[in-house]
Length: 312
Ligand code: UDP
Image (cartoon, rainbow, N blue to C red; front, side, top):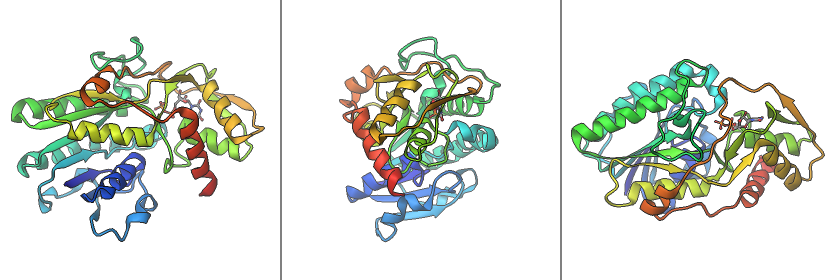
């Protein structure tokens, strides 16, 4: 197959790129490295099936490209830390950028378009766990709104193209994902806690640490995205991809401390505005339509992540 991955040098994008290369697919990556890294695809740099284009999707002439079997749009900063520094870039990427990729998708007669949306569209959810039918509880003007509303606008765009052009689009609502090739200084809970624990620094829990997240190991995420892209007759579907095993932040800290044999204490820091108090995907739809569910349990995934961070 011929695959286009925007954001293909990012954390999830680089895993997806390697996954398709391992299937002997031809992969074109478009990435401007605003949050992705050249290092993430260094192992594949001599692979003849990989073409990397350094470009910003909000300012790129897609007409130079050919027709693709699958286009994955993963091009967006996604860490809460980026919401401060890259808010306008996030909004542009998920609006102007996505329009350009969608127009190219239609004009090039490419087959399937998969968009990476997020559990953030549910905001600070009042329904728990979150089903795809839940409309969310989002502050439209808060610090997280660039991402939450950017992705909500992007979903509206996807559905507008679907309705107007009757094209094959699919939307993944990606829940918290972790694993090797996360950015060390991204500010994410897993990368922060693992690096703090292996350096015997205090683990920084925000607020009182009772907020919850449900962590999906990256290989499960990749299989979920691939199933979403390749399952027949699910055009126009929006599907949660994540692991429904829910933990508090304190529980995550304790597991990481145990797995690293760390003597670090937990220190409590101020929590950011609108930080969701709980988050857990209802994956009934993914199980039913994609025959997919996560396989990697938290301890196994964290052990691999700890190994990765110890070795870089
Ligand atoms: N968090 C934390 N300490 C950290 C980093 C994050 O307690 O050093 C908390 C954060 O407040 C949030 C959760 O962990 O409740 C997940 O944060 P992350 O930035 O990984 O992703 P989010 O789910 O907020 O997008």
